Amino acid sequence: MPSINNAYVSDKYQYTMGKSFFDTGRKEEIAVFNLFYRKAPENNNWAVVSGTEEVIEMVLALGSQPEDFYEKFLPGEEYKEFRKYLSTMHFTGDVYAMREGEIVFPNQPIVTVVGPIIEAQVLETPMLCILNHQMAVATKASRVCRATTHPVSEFGSRRAHGPWAAVYGGKAAQIAGCGSSSNILTGVFNNVPSTGTMAHSFVTSYGSSVEGEHRAFCDYIKTHLGENLILLIDTYDTLRCGVLNAIRSFRENGIDDSYPGGYGIRLDSGDLAYLSQEVRRILDEHGMKNCKIFATNGLDEYLIIDLERQGAKIDSYGVGDAIATSKAAPCFGNVYKLVQIGSEPVLKRSEDKIKLINPGFQITYRVLTSSDKATSEDGKMHKFDVTCLRGDSLEKKILAGEQITVRDEYESMKSMTLKAGTYCARPLQLKVISEGKRCAEGHTLQEKKAFFKDNLSRFSPAERRIINPHYYKVDISDDLYDKKMEIISLVTKEIENFKID
Image (cartoon, rainbow, N blue to C red):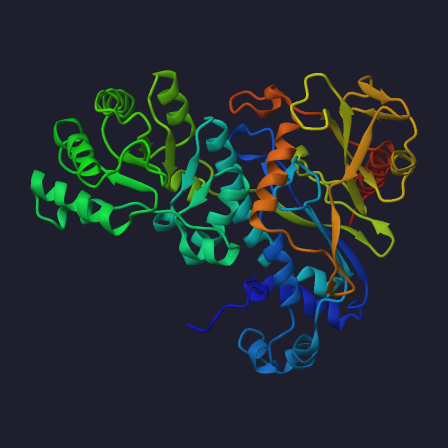
């Protein structure tokens, strides 16, 4: 199979619409599209952004195919001129995007595309493919990592929905809090180490015997001296031979609490709460108090919470398919909607209220204030988010540091006022592509992780909790609200008076 250019992991209807724009002379019309989601999975309060780096790469790869490539899915004489156009078409517009590691709420633009309508339209499917996958994984990883104060490793490659998903899922999981990934390409592409221990097959390759387990442990230790040493102890019997063989093997090879590389055992089956308590007792009795207990076996945030409630003696967790496939909610709900054509804001009206979108070219500000309860280094906490029409009256006040008032979109009597000098604000959408060329610097995986961690620290514990989180205030500006209501009112009147003969 040929290598895949992600810009063309698309649906045909993007191109059939493109032909209509082309044939009717609309190809140069400037369109504004927003990518956003309406509801986070698993009753989450928010989601974690991952994938915008790959989105930038995808957008820049558009238009790199010869004319005969397009003939394979747009055959026929009637498509000839359109195929010629596509073979020379590159993205020439602007893209605004949230940083990877950003925390995003429903209806906020994660990516905004501004450009000629055909160029912007054909980006929809590949952009959604990238972000829906990575944001599902990142958001699930954030939940799992928030369930414990102990490290969590991602190692779900074998359950991921394909090689591409395994590599980028490992990255997404680390951005959102996982300490490491087992996937080697994730490590190679992001210049971070990948992690791994041993499988049961390594133990059974020495024969199905207690002594074979002992020889397996010894050989593993000898061939990995200086590294972190983790022995899998549940191949035959965790308590009656596994942990004892581990202790025996560590001793015979000079591994004790003074070993600088770190050492431990892994539990992969059974009653993890009970077994970890017993293993901890046995290790301590043999003077191995620094020997860590690593637990795996179908874990997710709820099982981890329950294990810790039971007093499990687990130092680190390995989580596979729950993170790699976002198992409880494998389909993230990002959508890509036209919000402006030329200078005219537009929206999709629906009888389903959740599908009513915000029109126009938008920007979101995260407003922060000082707080005694802040856990961030500078003592500032997130107060609320507000999405404005770019250049509207509220954005101007925010940029000038003036007094601002934000009203609840659904309950007009609820409002919040901040006086001048009592707040600061930062835009969530940053320009990453300008006139078809990248204009934003990239960030390392460690920088993305640190950005997410700092971001998270600025929300209250109630807003960070996994079950029944307190909902953070997210609103739109009065100007955006008024424009939205104006369009809805005009469309409603037209519908009421619409007839055909």
